Length: 298
Image (cartoon, rainbow, N blue to C red; front, side, top):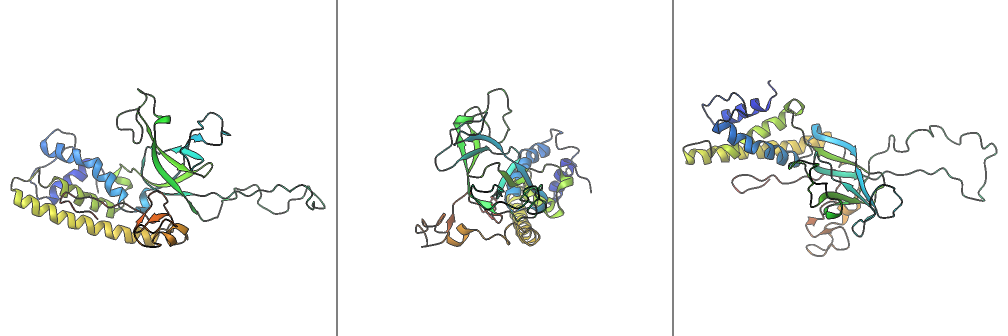
């Protein structure tokens, strides 16, 4: 199977019943222009609609500020309630969770019983990271915008996600040396699984069916059909990736147990508002609804 954006565009034209033979997605024809305008946005929205296994990425976050002032070469201004402020990754489509890394200290308190031979190790594998083999426990975090750490004008392009000369998108958390587990922007079709590719073709077809169909009644019928196909693919992806992944089923999260306390408006004792979980306090089982051209969402 060919794995170029032009091949995806050709499949989209097939899905809407077009006779046009596309040579390249950047060729400048009307068909290519309409598909190209929707191409990236559809990829981004579809990636946020499920915890796609192939798009899972874990990477350290860039520290912008430490409210304690103990980290050199970074700011100290952090919105109230949080200690650390990190830059939102430019390739991040959806933060799944911020792992809380437990620290193990081996310091002996003053006056405590000393070992008979201090030169001997009390346990093995002390040179390894304390987090090896441990499950990842999610920490609380919030995504915000901060004008205090805006990008320098002229050093970024217009399409750099989360950054502008006026402000930057940031992650606020109390985790030191934090990393993020997130859904990454995956632009190469060779990295997609077949389900994502099929869902993207249907999603794009639903977006371009009306502009590229002369008979608008037929275009709406094709659009609605492709929307249903996309929703079915998204539902299947949520089930499949939920079964394959271990990020949500193995981690007890306290806010999940208390998010619905008291019903709507009565969950202030937890971390949510009634039926609405507070965005940002994420475990591994969250995703966004995907919007469609007919006004529906799934």
